[in-house]
Image (cartoon, rainbow, N blue to C red; front, side, top):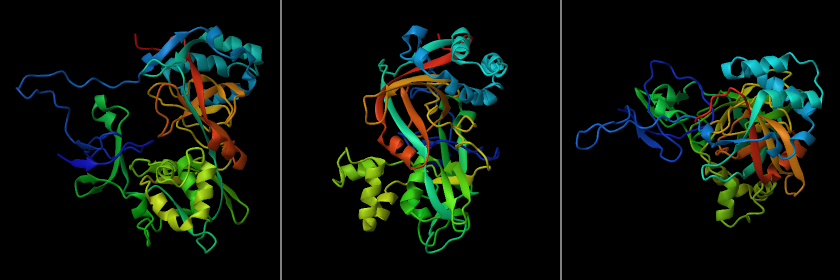
Length: 404
């Protein structure tokens, strides 16, 4: 029996098949490495824990006429993004037929695209577990940082690659009832123990020394790069390099914005990304303590040259203003999803066919989406300001298997 205290996180690498490890979830972080107990205290057999499966039952059948704005959208802008999804989905049985049809269409206009979806898909309204049909729509983006491949006084802050001793285990591969749960840690002898926290990783000297892939001029930018999960680094030689999420240390994310509000440093209205950055630049003496209050730490990898955008969880580059991150427990990854919400800090409608091509640690629930705004400062302003209410309709192939 192995006792571990770790946390759930966003993405994974496969464990060695020789390693035996255990379980946790984000709310209860201490667990034991043993099969689920099926014996009552009196010795009788009790039912095994239910197998956790995607709760697509929260997708409620709807009519095409229910979608608010589908006929008015520029579907031609969404079409290449859908074809990107199909580059992966075409290998999945439930998506093969609709993707084959799409890939055989030659530059369809908006009318043909609308006919394609209405003829090959059914519409479902996303809902929450309490039955409500509206939820939070936020935004994310790809920040632009200034950096170098060499450490210097101008570029002192490292971006680290995934460490070789980080072990990530998908628990559903051991016990089906633990699907969508995973642990991260490192092996000490034959035990899995928690991986280093942010404070431990950023100690001086750092135990991660030698695993740097790049050096950045601004520690605040490095922190927000970890929140976004990908970024562009403008090197001092003029080269621009794209870095993407590789893994995470397994510790839970703790919002520094919420902490600043709790401490009375910012009001709730001020706790936007820009507001936090402004506070940080005016309180450099308090910054390290604030950052270390979030023990979560993200590791990166350099992405291939020429990608049009950061790679999402689906394995394809996400597209500005046409890709969203969703909770794959409630919305199938890769599915077309029509979003009806408003522009950031505005009542101006934002109604658009999106593709569910990404996930995120904070994206939890049936009606929950993170809207990708693109790269750079302007995209960052939009993403940082976006906390809107919205509705989501999901399009699924007519033979897609859903719970009865």
